[in-house]
Length: 173
Image 1 (cartoon, rainbow, N blue to C red):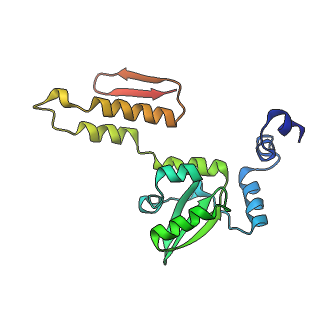
Image 2 (cartoon, one colour; image 1 turned 60 degrees about the vertical axis):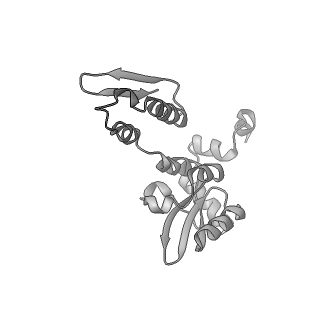
């Protein structure tokens, strides 16, 4: 308790970091006490047509992700299941019943990475433009913008671009 107060971190974080309890066990206990089912998103494969029900901006802002859709029901995980607004918004948008599950902050952070597209795929798509006639029309600005966005989301301090004989190696630090 003193460590949490002196470091200005939550008691939950201190308990997890010190190894008193695992993130999953603590999440399960909290979910049980709040009468919500608990979900570990990192153990599931979430299809794109399901997670795309909730736009990335909303998912990150409200820490919510849809992880299953079947039989007229959308199952969504939240770090704060008391957020009734988001449940109502998803129900209205999809015209489906919404089941709310609790997940941990850490698990949600990992799950939200699903919205990221593979940087290599983005760059390859941009470069697939026919450059035989107009070499100067390669969308360099789009590629640089994607690199910076990817680095920012990954909280990278540096972007290293290393030309190789046939490829280009891009590293984030």
